[in-house]
Amino acid sequence: MTTHIGLVGGGNITVTHARAARAISGVEISAIHGTNAEKLAHLCREYGGTPYHDFDAFLQHRPMDLVVIGSPSGLHAAQGIAAATHGLHVLTEKPIEISTARADALIEAAKQSKVQLGVIFQDRMKPHIRQLKNWVDQGLLGKPLFVDARVKWYRPPEYYANSRWRGTLALDGGGALINQGVHTIDLLLWLLGDVVRVQARTATTLHKIEAEDTAVAILEFASGALGVFHATTAAYPGYPRRVEISGSEGTVILEHDRIIAADLRNPPAATTESAALDENQSASSAVVSDFRSHQAVLENFLQAIQQNRAPASDGLEGRRSIALIEAIYRATKTPDRVAAV
Image 1 (cartoon, rainbow, N blue to C red):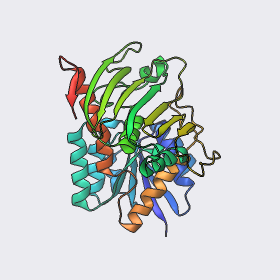
Image 2 (tube, rainbow, N blue to C red):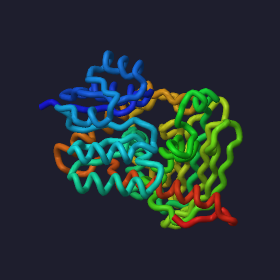
Image 3 (cartoon, rainbow, N blue to C red):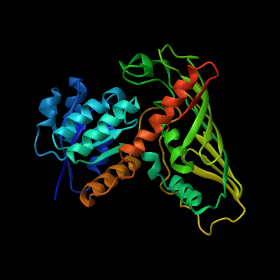
Image 4 (cartoon, rainbow, N blue to C red):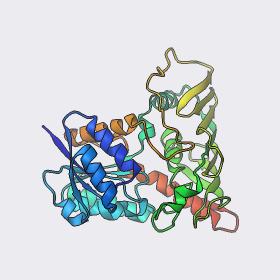
């Protein structure tokens, strides 16, 4: 049976979604919605599908079973709610939205329409990150004590200047934290559990944008663990993301989504093969050339639809990172720079 997918967007990430969809047997791109006529025409020529400039007309296209949303973050809820109302399953890019209020509206709409809702956090599908998750869940690190997470990336001025939405509060919801940092925020919550309190500062140090290009936060986890997190798009030339987790039984270091050190009191018998490591140059480029993890997210979402179960990251999971990001932004506006989550 063929699954018919509609794509919403037209930028770099929609190309990634199209390539991921085309790589899956039994999946067909039936329609693509976009606002840039030239990009939209190119996408449809390259990957198939009927082009639509009108979103309402796009939603009425049939056959279509689900939509994959790759539009600016501040449009995810409105477009997702409209799709759900038309009986279409919704898989949206990160973040789920730019506020928990909008995220909640989308989650409720999907529930009322009885359709699946998923959020694309492809890092959860990467082999070394899944290995680390297994080790944490098995207790191989012992009691989590401290985490240091660094997203020291670089984006050139034109990354923002050539975009109508990046770095804007209305459509991006912020800057380096909510756009680039959200993946790592999601990972910290997935690996180590909820955060209950934050202390934070943000700054616009380099780029001419209304949002921040640098954010630093101290995280207090419900487990008692402490964390330091910082994200920036101003660290020329850009460095691989690095996450260091220390527990009572050892330390694991993740760099560019690969476990580069695992100093454990009781090491596991086997480690992850490195053949499928992520090849994207995320530290210095927004282009996603290696779409395998996005393909894995889409395959998982299709299985969730078929089996009527929650996908790897459903709406409630996607909401967690936005709730923490909201708290970080809220903390930056208080006199003591502290906020509860």
